[in-house]
Image (cartoon, rainbow, N blue to C red):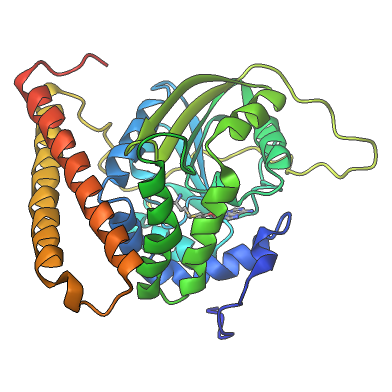
Amino acid sequence: MRSTAPPSEPAVERFEPRAVRALARMFDDVSGRYDLLNSILSLGQDGAWRAAMWRAVPEEAGTCLDLCTGSGASLRGLLRPGRRVLGMDASLRMLERAAGTYGDSGWAPRLACADAFHLPLRDRALDVVTIAFGVRNLRPRSRALEELARVLKPGGVLAVLEAVAPRRGALAGLHGFYLRHLVPLAGRLSDDPSAYRYLSESIFEFGDGASFERDLAAAGFAVELSRSFLFGATGLWAARLTRRPPAAPAGEIQAGSPNRLQVARPVDGRRRRFPQPAPEGELEWRAWTAAQLGFAIALVVALAWALAVLLKLGADLPIESWQRRGLGFLLVAGLTGFAARALVLGLRLQGKAPRR
Ligand SMILES: C[S@@+](CC[C@H](N)C(=O)[O-])C[C@H]1O[C@@H](n2cnc3c(N)ncnc32)[C@H](O)[C@@H]1O
């Protein structure tokens, strides 16, 4: 049921260890416009980032869990004929959206409301776990990684996409401004603006990914792939479980159920279209690169127009002078960044598609 309580301020409880209830309530409240805001805040790039995460999943993986699946945006690319795909999340409202998207046919992902710290899975049940923009919410992270090491087979893969805090470098100021001011501003479109302040603060808390890599190593994962997107604003890691973590101390209750997973089959026995792997050909690569180029050019035009308006009307705008300077800096940096991006994409389109 939707929470009728006003959004909690200052919502310190969301940062507490295992604050699964507080976080589930928060995501229940923002579920209505979550996907829209996600696209806005990622400048429309989250689809490409998820595609990179899916590519880190071995084709032969038989059972995959998308943890913190939310509205299920990261499930589609995991679907394959014969593969068991599970989506788990603590927020029922988010899961309802995922259920609305995928339905319940035989090949649809199996969705379950579950806490990442107590997954309803037997030991070594999974070949792959993916987590997109969720790991930052799991505190303490070391305990969550232990649970993932429990449910993954040895040699299993964990692929994680996460928003990261500014690293040192030319764009750190711009990135910090974006997280501190623009993310909470965009959050005003949401039913719970405080959730977007939490988003911003939790990204700073997550850091630049270095401590995450240390936690991965401590939990027995070897990082095999590490990439960053949008000038370092988002990270992707793929890590393989190389050793079992130490056993839980005596007295600690072990999570998980001994039940085996069931093969997903249509209950009515009717034939369904099998999910197909995303086409990986050159055509798809060219179409996607061209779409990104179009998007980058549109942004360059929009930012140039906004800059022209700022230069013309700047003094009349009802904002402080530091805000005007910040905005000007942001527009120039964005313009330069996206012009460079458009150039790179244009050059890429001239060349050959990369081998994968
Ligand atoms: C930022 S959303 C990401 C949703 C989705 N993966 C995406 O990329 O759009 C984070 C999700 O993590 C879920 N979450 C937070 N803590 C959790 C926990 N302890 N167990 C399971 N899910 C959790 C929230 O309910 C929320 O749906």
